[in-house]
Length: 165
Image (tube, rainbow, N blue to C red; front, top):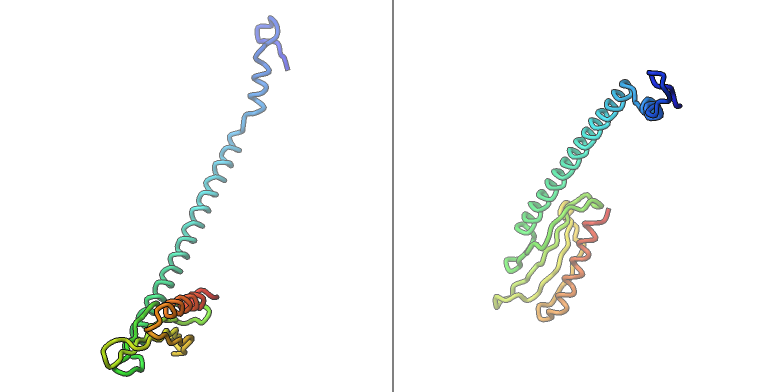
């Protein structure tokens, strides 16, 4: 590794350093290949990211459209539901259920008595496409604690119907 210097006067101290530099030097072709591979990787990464974002955006638009459709069906049902003039339908929540491939709505149905005050409330969960009643629980307005417990149970059942796959 030690070589004589060009003047022939002895050993060249820098020759080990030159040897290491020569050995660690990357050829110009391998640099071009490395830079090309980096560029290809970046382009593939950016392309994959853009495709992913478009798919997610399309799914989000679809989910939004389903929810808007369900909300419109829920409001329509509340207006046109079979009832007497003294019965009032109030929409609690409406959402799309993947498991049923349908819109599910939760209503509070209030029966207004002759005195103008609510006599009886009923908590309903309805499949809006098939008009199937999934839950029908009466709740006496004189028993507030019972009504609160029934309402909480009804909300949990609604959440399970919407979340199940």
